[in-house]
Image 1: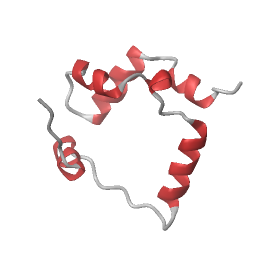
Image 2 (image 1 turned 180 degrees about the vertical axis):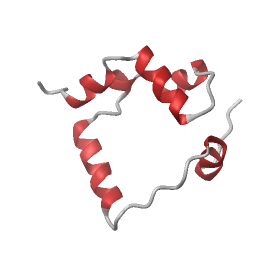
Image 3 (image 1 turned 30 degrees about the vertical axis):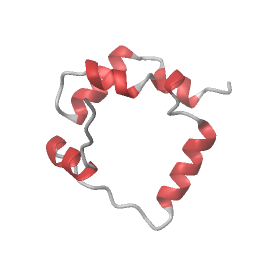
Image 4 (image 1 turned 90 degrees about the horizontal axis):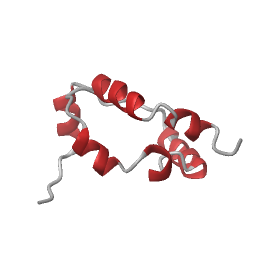
Length: 82
């Protein structure tokens, strides 16, 4: 069974504020990420599977859990071409 949760609902549940970005910042971030390919499953893991494994509730818990599970992910994403 598949269902979708709206981003506003996720932010509300996780008690995260909606970030404010300067004009055009999101487009630049998206372009940089596209060029870096840092969010590809081979770099960060398959998110749909990781979400199923995660039992926490907050963004802080997710960050701690993810770094424990994939300690090399940030280094791999940032130094991919090294």
